[in-house]
Amino acid sequence: MWSPCEMHGLLILAVFYFPAMVLAAGKGKLHRPFNNSLTAIFVFGDSTVDAGNNNNVMTVLKSNFRPYGIDFPNKKATGRFSNGRLVTDLIAAYTGLKEYVPAYAQTNLSIEELMTGVSFASGGSGFDVRTSNSLGVITIKKQVENFRELTTKLAKKLGKKKTKSLIEKSVFVVSAGSNDIFIGLYSSMFRTDERVDRFLNKMVEYAKEFLHDLRKAGARNIAVVGLSKIGCAPAVVTVNPGEGGMFERNCNESMSADAMKFNKKFVKAIDEIQSDNFRIFYVDTYKPMVEMVKDPSKFGFENIDKGCCGSGLLEMTMLCNPVSYICPDRSKYIFFDSVHPSEAAYKNIFKALRPTIDEAINFFS
Image 1 (spheres, rainbow, N blue to C red):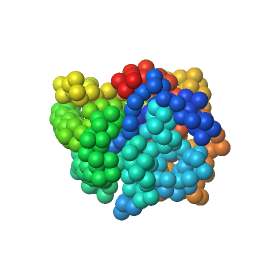
Image 2 (image 1 turned 90 degrees about the horizontal axis):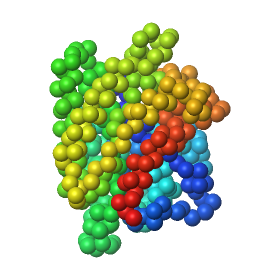
Image 3 (image 1 turned 120 degrees about the vertical axis):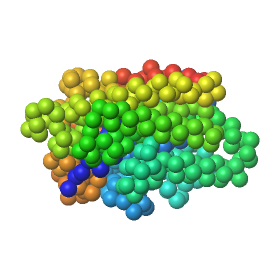
Image 4 (image 1 turned 180 degrees about the horizontal axis):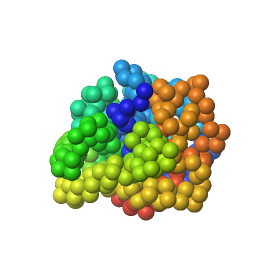
């Protein structure tokens, strides 16, 4: 049975749009907008950007089986929690680096693959290591350790000087935070405004510590994705619905309000720690999600409160499996399972965020 502790994917729309000309990747050479000199993309966080690192971890939070990956190249279930590509795959292709970002845990990666970027993310992870430990997944601190391990591998092949240059011209993408909120706040019955504020402040401190760790590891350009309107995920609407109860299927506005509070605190912290040689780009996904839920038909969606897999009410990870019913047209659904977005949702959100993404890419032009 689903529990709030499984809500590891509620940073549901930490996403960027994939332009049509890049969507046809494989039909031609990937281009580089603004003639950018970006060298690689390195990814950290939770299930929204896990490309398969959980496959060999002793946890139930896996997705390396159908119907996950049903719209991925060759219809392959790689361990991505979606029907197709993840946000980081779309970013990599848009910037001209590669068609998709592999998981660091993938054992057959070439030096060229490692040089252009991998994902260290783990479904179920959070800024607080206790979040990851409670679900038996890779902590965000371990993800940084794995990145350090990678830099050592690269230095042996390229030399320390070239490796340092490569890292400094890379972009680091961070997508985490929702698991901390659901495990730390909504798995407890004792929720007061004072406790929420203290908890969110602590979350920000953990996030700042993580960003400092990345800086010490060599990161100079980081794209941090803020939390979205997390109270609108189908599983949340089913188990902890908003006004009107489960049958009305309204978003849980209290959960979304907590996400917004965290975002505001995090943005203030980012302004305090970034500098000329340590740039942090904040990506706001809250407003775009509000607009999609308010007027789904404008974005081509017909279903906003159920996932495409099974009943769409609770199915995710092991509950969304090879025998589950799958909707025939994933492009009409914001969510693929009851927590994670469809590839179609990723594309629509990027359209709203395109100016921010282009601003970040321009730094490498």
